[in-house]
Length: 110
Image (cartoon, rainbow, N blue to C red; front, side, top):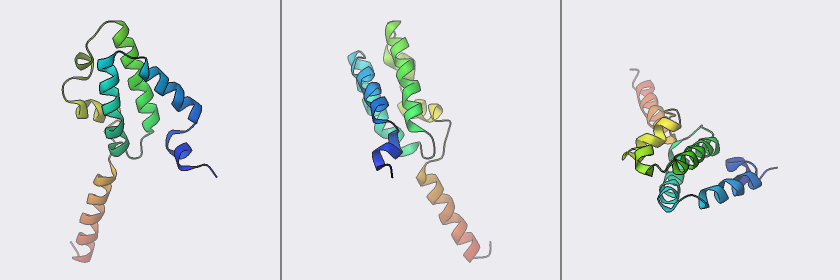
C-alpha cells in the first residue's frame, strides 16, 4: 500500500527533481513558488496539485530565462493566479458548504 506522501505527490524522485528545479530559480521566483505551494495544496482539491506545480515551475523557468519579473508573470493577485492554474477547481471548503446547504434544504423540505 502506498504511503500518504506517494498518494499526494506521486513518485518521490519526481518530486525531488521538481524541488531541485525550484531551488535553482532566481530568488524572487523561489519566494513566490514557495508561497504558492501551500496555497495550492489547501485549495486545489481534486486537482493533480503536482501537475499544476510542475506547470508553474515550467512557466517560471522560461520566464526567468527571459528576464521577466515574477510578478509580471503572476500578477499581484497570487491567489487568482493559482486559482486560474488549477482550473477553478472547487476546494474541500466549497464541497462542505454545498453539503451543509444541501443537508439543511433536505431537512427543511426546501
